[in-house]
Amino acid sequence: MVMDHLTVENGLSQSTVMDVLQDSQGFMWFATEDGLNRWDGYEFRHYTRDRSDPTTLSSDFIWDIEEDSAGNLWLATRGGGVVKWDRATDKFTTFSHNKDDPASLASNTIRVVLIGDSGEIWIGTRGAGINVLDPETGEIRRLWDDIGDYAVPGSEKVYAIFRDDDGTTFAGTDAGLFQLSADGVVEQHFQHDPDNPDSLSDDGVRSLYQDHEGVLWVGTARAGLNRFDSETGQFRRFTHDPEDPSSISASNVRKIYEDNRQRLWLGTNDGLNLLSRETGKFTRYFEDPADYRSLSDSNIMAVYQDRGGIIWFGTREGGVNRWNPRSWSLGHYNPVWIADAGATSFADDGDGNVWIGTPGAGLTRLNLLTSEAQRYHSGGPEGARLSDDRVMSLWLDRHGALWIGTMSSGLHRLDTATGELTEYKADPETPGALSANGVMSLFEDRTGTLWVGTFGGGVCSFSRNDGQFRCYQHSSDDPASLSDSRAAAIVEDGLGGLWIATVGGGLNYFDRATGKFRHYRHDKDNPASLSADQLYALHVDKSGTLWIGTAGGGLDRVVVSSLGPEGISFEN
Image 1 (cartoon, rainbow, N blue to C red):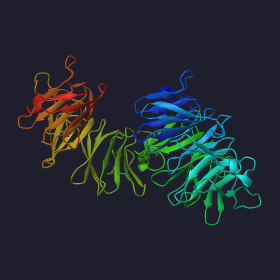
Image 2: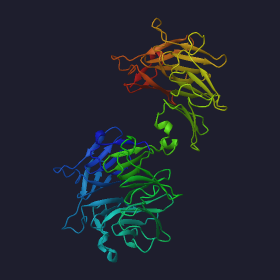
Image 3: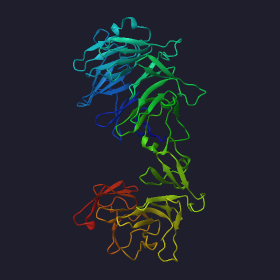
Image 4: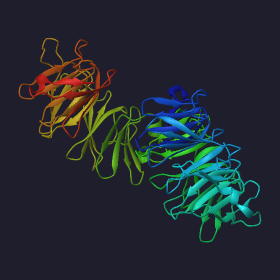
């Protein structure tokens, strides 16, 4: 898994991330031991305690975050009771324990909050059971005052509260699992029985989650994971076995989460786990100090998926990690040919195959359905052997042929049906040959003409009829020639105009009728000019707008003028 990290170096207030939430407006929130953090995708805003201001946080140690239907946040704190953040005022209101008021919160040490079906706030305390807060009136009902015969040692320490699809509430405590009615009456109590292998594996319940099939999963502090069968009242145990690398990695299961692909994740105090329901086996993920792309810490506190599909992992000492599941189109690991060399270019045939160019390991065709990979490289068989393993560009044309641009061995054409390779190389003595052997970019226009952007030889068009190249290079004596002979990207706009991005010469528009180029360069005195002359990427979106990726100048957008190419400007 390839992780990105957000740590104190990026602006996070503290390295322990207890909980993660994306709110209704898209902001990401992180609960830490040093306040509440809001991240907008670019920077953090910190909310911390100010003892002189009662409208700030009452405690900087936050365990849990929930959002209500009005967009307000409710926070479980250690020592500061329950705190409400009001979105409209950007201020905090605290609900705390008052020893002289039996209608106040029963304890200020809160581990979990849950928004009920009617908007009421269910509160799990670490020492006084469950409280229910009416946010409209501020009235608090202490459920554990009436727990009666169920008041066994440890039951007052509540670590998890979960309401299933049927409206049944479950509470995880140090005395096992409690099942409650909608109004908070205890209906059943499940505990560990050393003589019953179908009982709860451990009384220290730390996490609860119901999956898409309606199954309740129970994580414990000392004996792993349990799958609860509500019809039989039995538990199936998944425990850590130091001799079995496919068992769960640790016994303390802090977080259970199912993502939008119905994968079940387990966060433990020693590793992140992915459960295969079919086999009952676990895939483990740990921090690897030698790999900066791994988890930043193996001690997992939180797991959460945002609406864009990104999965976030809060850790004990490494801040928050984020992972894009789309990266698993390449399989559940980094193949050797990717890990060793990286990837430079892609081509998709529409039939489930993706071609991947690398800067040192050749070309690979990956079948996304079977994960089967076929490689083409310099050590391959005769007839299917690349002359250069440094693949810089790819283009799959309308006839099904794959064109491969290499760093120093010219252009290759691969017949994807037969696997046969044809080479096109630069030769100054041969008319109609390629102008340079370094091929940076490839593009097929609407007429079927293939355009080849080279490093040092400008841009060439290829004629399939005679196999000849017509090349356009930079000439210092011709102001209408290509502005630089290093052509990094080529695209065609909606009107058939051809645009070429160069490395150092800015942007070029090619007039096919005259064979001349119009140049667009950076002008430090003109804010509407191109922001940089070193360009690496071009893209025409569905609306026909041209976007330009620069080296050092950010992203530019072409602002179209009625005057045509000569009147355009740029927005940075």
